[in-house]
Image (cartoon, rainbow, N blue to C red):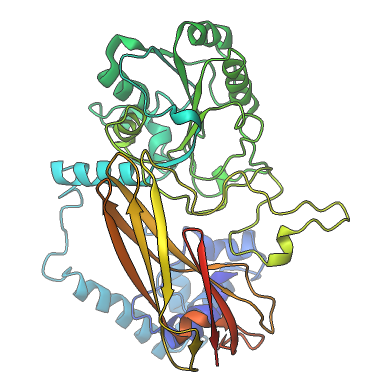
Length: 466
């Protein structure tokens, strides 16, 4: 367990990485070394193991067993005083750096929910929203279209925020500010009486799917908001990534009306949507976009903000097919033994815009690179559409041959740019020797000569490292 792992907490964290802060346990996890992990016979031995491994502080402030047991261990010479001195030094160093000796009781709410911080949260939410599908340019929606909004995440601030918001699990909506808008409220603010809300289902129960279907038939487009309620830590563990059955039934019923459907995914992890993705004309990944997220979603759906987010993970198609973006090349192949090839719902880095971007003129500073020489990469990006927008330019690198099977591609650089329609920009990236390395069989960074492929925006070129 991490709490007694000297190699990680001391050798790597402090020795290799030079960490100078202090290490604090998770909540009651020193006790859990006995009750859960069975790594120690009793709490006293668990305390000894944790402190000697590198734990400087127990998180639980109301339980003095850690302090009392540690005092006993020092008196019994089972924990050296030098280790106590190290822990105290680590803690005091951080307190000095934070100015807690000059101001030991700072106002914990100062600077929260100011107009500036709210604007920052709104902009962060807007920029993160990721448009994964937009068939026939369904989005953005005109504000005079009749819009049905349905689904369990449509009218919930809890889902927009998730765990550790106001309370541990983030599920006490009475504590949320009353002046923040849910997705429903934000759309209705912009579209007025053209937007109708029917809940349809909760996360685990059908409420009025027939009513939602009838409302969809009367609407021009349906916005189906699905995903998750709030969660964190062990209570949030699940055994299946599938969306709950009530949500799937609601989405399928709305899609069966033949009206255009926009799926809005409000979730902190990728819940599989393979049963409803094909029936939706547009899909917007909202993640957990904060109290300002309802406004951000409405801004994107109704065209007041041009989305530019990119998916920061691979979105699986089925619950048991999660493979990361940097998978080995052979994992993309059909094996002939019943194993399906890599085929996610959406790939890492996916993300559409209401404009289009064209990549051109990928150039390398050299095709033959000396062992310690850098490689300069340049590429031109043009906004070839009709709207201004943001584009995240991602540079991938593939080592073609290595003593350990290499990844198909790895992100090495990225840059976010803003372009007006018709404008172009040339970006430059520098790849250095450590960018070409991988962790070898000796658990250390290794660089081997050979061929490398650079990939940016559908373009590629190769160089040879000597």
